[in-house]
Length: 112
Image (tube, rainbow, N blue to C red; front, side, top):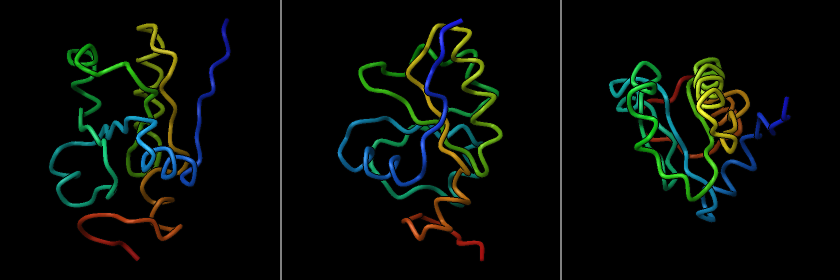
């Protein structure tokens, strides 16, 4: 079985997103994204439960970083994408909670 680089830290996610090197895929529900979201360019929202029907809509010109609140949904999304042959999708370690813990920009509520 091929090994894939499965995780990326929040710092590298932020740097790569700001440089336009990756797409960010937030796999939470739209209502959750409306309440709290990463404040960086190139974020796409496709909920985990819609991913099986919509994953082909995702542009594949750059690697993907999968994002959710704590990383658990992102792991599920990555497992699905791997079964579809997508090898350039990594999970942002710790999710949005870790992102906020580092003080990185978000839109919406801040949980403290």
